[in-house]
Length: 467
Image 1 (cartoon, rainbow, N blue to C red):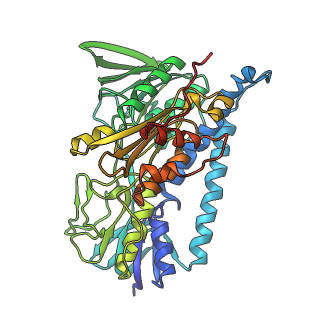
Image 2: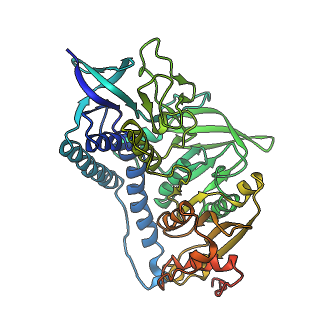
Image 3: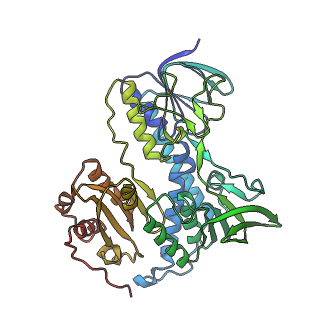
């Protein structure tokens, strides 16, 4: 006899566990199936472990530069294995919190691989097969790293972010990173801060090709200034191994070049993890993932999908959680509660990068006339106090209505500051309403005031030249 549920959620990542908890809170008898560890990619092999390593490496880098602050540090060193242990401790603590919430909300958690066998049936494949029946099924199985078809891609030392974060910690002295997107530039920042010689190879014409062009240009300049080697418009052709090192051969500006490293990190994106998820005859997937409608329902009534696994979706943890809330609301016959059109994107380099809404180029493509306010954070008091490098805040407004359309930030705490501007976009605030806010001094948030006042032609502060 199969166990009967109102909803069966597949995948316990930030989309799945939020959906399960929200469904249980809404009175639905809920099952959650997870083949690995609760928390999904974000908690176990993505956002949280990466940022934990980022924090440690950034602190180490700062200690090496604190002489300018009047602080002397002798014999400063790091232990990569202890840094990785700290990463594991952080993820374990957060995992236990999720497990507590699932238990507190009376969600039944099943460990094993899920196989959707029918419109309302799921088999949990573990040591023993368990049959579940659900009025609704919600798939939040996430994604896995993409592996490009490059000769030598299976050689020892060629790794994805999953393998890099799962290991106990290797003190790499050199690394080639294939891909200059979010994952690539974050790992470049981490390992370079620890003294690793890093080379980034990106096929597109700039780093972070999906971001504002000025952000890409500034990041490229900062990384090169710090000693990170960056090749854009470059295509990797072959990987070979010689003793303890890997040779990466690539084409760049009509020439074939090569570089040697202890490890090659593949960071060319992620793909939907649909393998073995549906039984034969349940065709709701494409090469890019599961196709859904505006309510996240597939072509099979009662089967929903959210997060990284959906076709054409935005692969961010906070997007998956928001989609979970809206999908469950639809299942319960309620109106969606979250605006999914305004999605902040955050990159935890140094300085941090954040973007939300439209940039000027995207607005131009849509035929929208805009006015832009910009402030260089080298004129911000808190930035000078904390010895921050170059950065800026840019805010985009519709020229006719003065309504805020987007913002791009590259500065300390950008990933925190962007939430204020996301809230402004969702609530369609105008440049005058944003200008009416008093922001405390000295803070990084004053940069928003200056950018807004620049759009009004009332900027007060001019960035001084750095000594």
